[in-house]
Image (cartoon, rainbow, N blue to C red; front, side):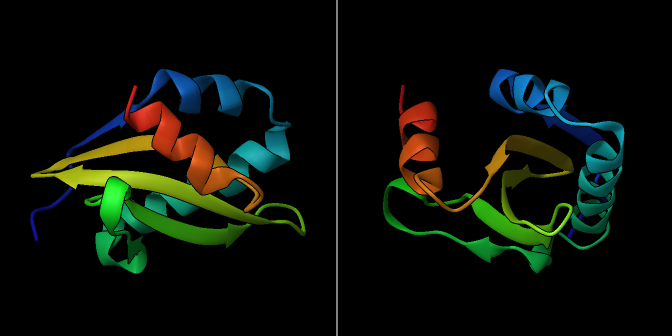
Length: 96
């Protein structure tokens, strides 16, 4: 696996991140660092979300899913959120 040299946030990811508090952003950034160091930490998805990986982490006592994709040495961050409707909304976002 190539080393991650570039991280790109989708517009959805960026707008979600702006709504977080500073301590939540710190936890999110730590999760992104973990993924960048070892992209295999996430679980690969199949079907409509083929190629997308999801990493689960705690964001201030809440389980959060972080959807991303690796393309060569680029980490593309799609979205994050709680499990409720996460995959449905992610599928709609990716397929539009």
